[in-house]
Length: 69
Image (cartoon, rainbow, N blue to C red; front, side, top):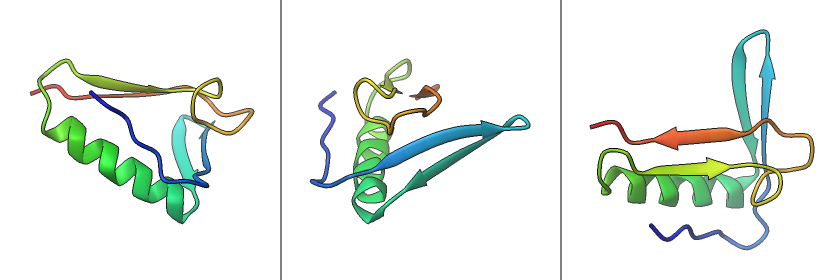
């Protein structure tokens, strides 16, 4: 699956007391929306792995979103 990003995206993932919080600017939200739509059109088991080395702001928690059915 191809993962596309809108120029200027910023996304941060934090976990506070067991609650995951995804914070993003407009470009980040548009990027996530496109990626989630592509994931929805994929196959069960497809997933997107987000981390600070590839897409998230420094200090972010890793996030994996997986299609299950």
